[in-house]
Length: 393
Ligand code: GDP
Ligand code: CO
Image 1 (tube, rainbow, N blue to C red):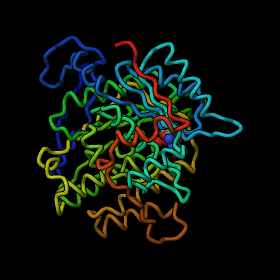
Image 2: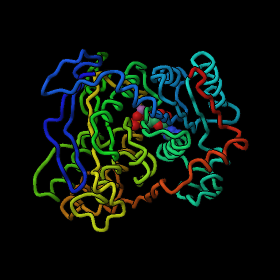
Image 3: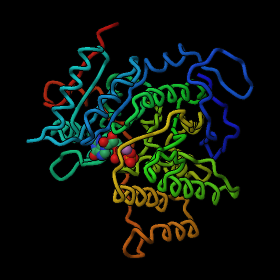
Image 4: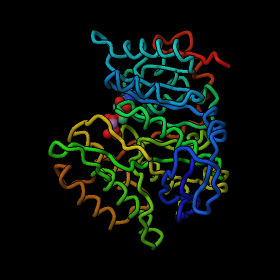
């Protein structure tokens, strides 16, 4: 792979944010170029062997999930966390049947579990991590909640890197690229605490019966603006470095995943920046993770070659995402009165009143949970856990 080197890197305390990097060639020939990094496929493969791709899914079209699963490079482990409908119209069962067939044909390692499995709730409860449980001790609805289950499964199979891919992607080939882009980021990284976030080159929409290759979505524009404002107002130097505030497609080293805090639902992605700025930024108070602070937290932002074409979820979904994103920024320790008043203005259309936006309950790091024990508790007892091993090697 040939990837542009970042032209600039913003350093904010222990956090390094690299400027957007373009993929120049998905496959390359070892050409030495001072402005680009050539990463041989063998190096990418070494990362993929230690990589789990988590796919959160809730009631998506089975054809889309099928395409996504088939596109994920063979060397990775696939982890599907489903919150799909059960009961009479058992979508989860359809997903399971499809995955069973796929494994028969490919022998790739796959794990599947349902978010509402009582044994999953119980395993969290036993681990003393009840932050994502509802009153019945089941895991709540929410994408972040599903992602956390996926991260624990990834840890239980000993993976060093965890990436995410949505299940509602119409272009399987783009999913394959995302995973390779993640691997490229980790090949470039110098810190064991690093994160790769993807930025779509285009997000095509149908406008007046024609395909229009849109570059920016409304939510991401707003989220990025406020994340940059947090950086600018605290450092005194204006920046526009953050372009991946809402990146659903992102990956982390397991070491970083272990020390992150997580915001529920769809606000998980923008909150990752807020948390890193608060915890490791210029004004960080006590250092809870001195190793990470010393090594530095590295954030890569990569522009994909493929466009991103996914299921449209409607205006309410967009508003919820916007609210979730801006709220996490509003509640940041680094937010001053100016940024807060701007954020309130932004939310004026969405919040009925001009009150303070709701506080978000943040979930603490998962590093303290014993993932092997978590898995042992599920295996044998859980009715929805399916674990297909790789049998080729
Ligand atoms: P967007 O692409 O960011 O606008 O959001 P989507 O609605 O497409 O959600 C991203 C991914 O998360 C999709 O694969 C959804 O099916 C999945 N998802 C949404 N809600 C949940 C949930 O409650 N649990 C799980 N496990 N996945 C979810
Ligand atoms: Co989507």
